[in-house]
Amino acid sequence: MNSILVTGGTGHLGRPTVSQLRAAGHQVRVLSRKHGPDRVVADLTTGAGLEAAVEGAAVIVHLATSLGRQDAQQTRRLVEAAAGVQHLVVMSIAGIDRIPLSYYKTKLEVEQVIEQSGVPYTIQRATQFHDLIDRVFSAQRYLPVVVAPTISLQPIAVEDVAARLTELVGQPPVKGRAPDIGGPERRTVRDLARIWKQAKSSHRPIVPLRLGGKVFRAFANGDAMVDGPAYGRITFAEHLG
Image 1 (cartoon, rainbow, N blue to C red):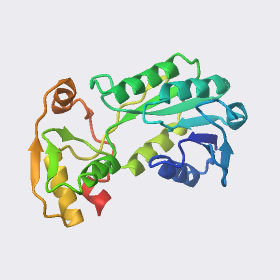
Image 2 (cartoon, rainbow, N blue to C red):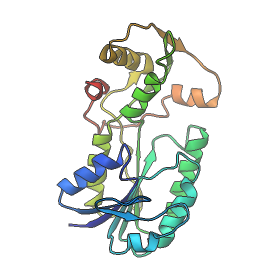
Image 3 (cartoon, rainbow, N blue to C red):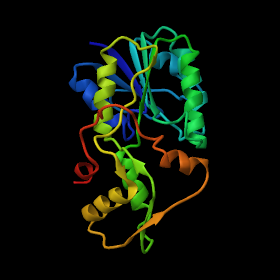
Image 4 (spheres, rainbow, N blue to C red):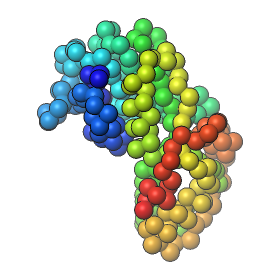
């Protein structure tokens, strides 16, 4: 089995990914700025400790994000240190080439850094995580209503994404993008709000929200969803349950 280094291994996606990789028999280390069991200490932003961190890793699974602020620079630091790595698996987002959000533009830049790096790689795009949808609704807890944009989404569970990343680790590098993956259901955000309300025993009314602009139109056109059969198995209701 492979020796694997996971960046962002303590995050929402990182934790189930590390767990599933270990369950598959891989030797896994987590890159972190803080000491801990099975961690290697390094800083993606400054590059401090990176060369030592990647030493001996056959595969790197790059999940770390600064939510856009430093993502491209951190990825440059990583690929500079990872010249001898056999496979770099990188997490990205479905629709980033069609939805003009600033964070998505940064993720596109990250993909371009990877493509130009010379390191054998696979880029995996996925739709929005169930956790994100849950947090968006939960952030409205002080409002008298639940606001639901009039768009549809295809959210996916981090456990399902972790399963796909574990599959990719055991395969040769695609040297491009693997097929995009999405959750098992395409739902309007209003439907997702109803499911969330039921799970949280909320009685607040749902208020649909229609916005203008290129970003809203792209989401309304389905650009955040994926073509083909769904990969994910866990529904939003099951995630909340």
